[in-house]
Image (cartoon, rainbow, N blue to C red; front, side):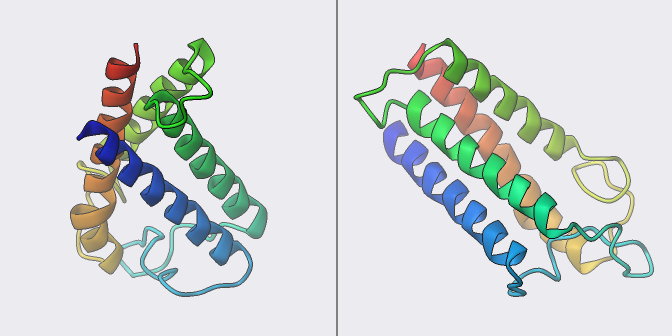
Length: 142
């Protein structure tokens, strides 16, 4: 069962990476709700093409780490580097869950925006899931 959950998470991460590539090359679907907004509904920042591609690369790399640590590719066994990469992912997604205490995460103060709604019901729970699934992969892959 855990293999199925890890596989589903790898597919989800890969899809998120593909979405970032789509945005980097000019796609607009979903782009209005994924950036934090201020109380006046202005985006707090607008990432450029390079930044978006870097995020896509990191998400693809996270998917690869989970794929390897979860034992889904039996030709390559998880090693020390893969395991520590997964610990980095547990930490990164965990920090995303906590948030910046203003615009995103569990402890955000700006809660009246469209982004905030999606952050509360989709983005933060997804990051909780990813943090837990990376931890599970580390635990079973030891």
